[in-house]
Amino acid sequence: MTVTTPVSETWDYIVVGGGSSGCIVAGRLTEDPKVSVLLLELGPSAEEHPETLTAAGYKTAFVNDELFFERYTTAQPHAGGQTIFAGTGSVLGGSGSVNGMVYTRGAREDYDEWPEGWRWDDVVPDFERLEARLRPRRRPPTQWTEACISAAVTCGFERREDLNDGHLSNVVGYEWMTYEGDERRSSYRAFVRERKAPSPDNLTVRTRARAHRVLFDESRRAIGVEYEQRGADGQIELRRASVRREVVLTAGALETPRLLLLSGVGPEQALRAAGVAPVAHVPGVGQNLHDHPNVPLFFASRGLVDCMQPQLYSFYRTRPNAALPAGQSDTCYVFWPAPSAMKQAMQRILPGQLLGPTHAEGPGRSLIRAGVEAAFAIPGVSAAVDHLYGIVVILGKPTSRGSVRLRSNDPRAPGVVDPAYFSDVGDMATMVEGVKVARRLSRSGGLGAWHSRELMPGPFVNDDAAIARWVSKNAITTYHFAGTCRMGEDAAATCDSRLHLRGVTGVRVADASVVPTTPVSAMNAPSMLVGWRAADFLRAERS
Image 1: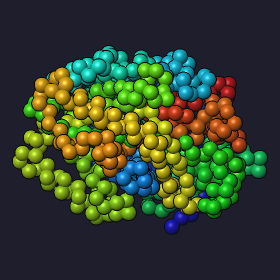
Image 2: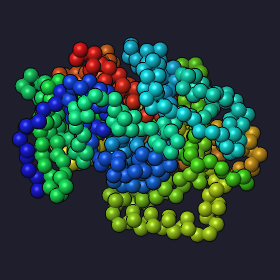
Image 3: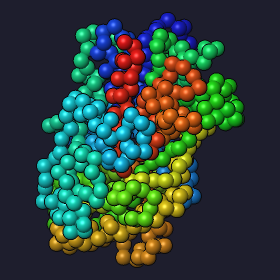
Image 4: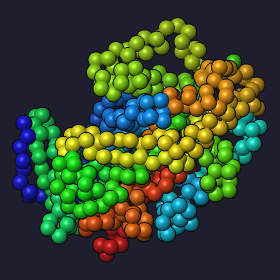
């Protein structure tokens, strides 16, 4: 049963989405005791699932269905017709509470593609302030990780001690990670649990709260948010929260544009087709979607993989003649230790691959997961996995662009997510070359000395055409969705460079949606940067 609660609560700011960016916005705004903030999060609290607060809990979190917004892409014609799992973290802290804790700023060249005021030299001071709160660090070397670095150096990579210095041209090193001891240092922990606030009562956090739409008055100014929340008795209440100043959307690159479309902000014709009354014609909402697709190559070695965290990152330019600045890397390589989370990865990915998206959440999923659990209990299986590792080839600078659209005007219906993987032929050409680089890595330096044997794609996948077919059938997401509410000062940009949403007033977008072109590396640090700067903009304009 759904009931409607009358408008009776008002805040200065409403932040929709308690993920990596949203926790920073809400936490920093409420450091001023005179400011009140409502933070809405679709998922549960982190405290309900302690694995989101521990450094070792990421693999358990990855198969906890309560912590993921489950969705699948449309069938991808250039990726073997696959419908690819595109789930994102749905819990306080968002994907930053369930991911591998990678913290990488990106390359200096990446930020040359961002608007004025967001270039490398502009954002480094903000990264440094953010990092003073997060306290990221690197993990100590192991015999296997040093063998991986030896292989990369033999293949022409430069060993770098700091992968956050903006130089990511053909380099390898230990990545920065957001952990401290046994704790995960997510933005939720650093900015909400450890909030620097004289007044503990000016931040209201509501979990299991699904935003339906942003509310506008006749002048197209945001006046509040309509949302539903499930109570302890199971009853769903439809609520309306009023806002004095601004609504800040931080639900992520797949959910923020969907919420805007449900609110009547987007391409007018598409809104009408979905049964939504237009409020403002903003054509760019939901466009420019891009991601880092990847394929994992697997190898067996004679030596033990003595590492329980993916802690190495490397970057390489595979196609010197591609349309990128000289020296800018176009691929990433993650040396992945199978003993760390092979079982959990199979339990998460296999149901969707074997059953398809329409049946992946039914009893079949439980059966497949139980089968994986039983297989790993067989004597010898875990011992074999201890000698197994992957080299994950990631497309770092994709040129393919997709979209997020409405399926209907039902707020509970997932959006239509089409990342258009490999629709630009240059992306597949880069991935083919990346697979060749990964193979060279497995045969070189320290890894070569361990007598690595390729298991996947295997010895029969040799020529470029065969590699391309294998990539298309095995590509998955790296969960680095970006770009669907692109910022910029050009007329086609959805948001300006201070993150105001065009076409309306009183709304800002402050997550990976605004990133015009994704960095070559992971998206969590840039997403937190956007949240940090959004809080600065809001605080400056208030004062």
